[in-house]
Image (cartoon, rainbow, N blue to C red):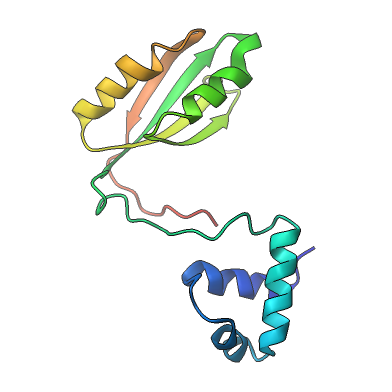
Length: 145
């Protein structure tokens, strides 16, 4: 279980994972050693999976977000999920059971590139049919937490 201090540490790291432990400690009114040990515990327990960079996709040349809903043959779900997860522009893969079997979040440069991604990479996967391709008009919030 995470306590309030753990949640506050995660919030500080999410804002800036390069912030020195001593500054986080000062902001949270605890010792630097406490911060160091808590972060070590959060990493060891798997709460923190990795330290990474939060890239602005539009600035990196991938301004278009779209969701793709796939129907997948029942015995192929896991292998298809793994295969589509290897496609560079597919940034998320979720299993669903409402309007299809897999929900993909993709980021691309343009509608043309979205069409090529669907036609050439996704539709070429055995056991897959594309049910919906939904380009996003505006992103109001996009955050992992």
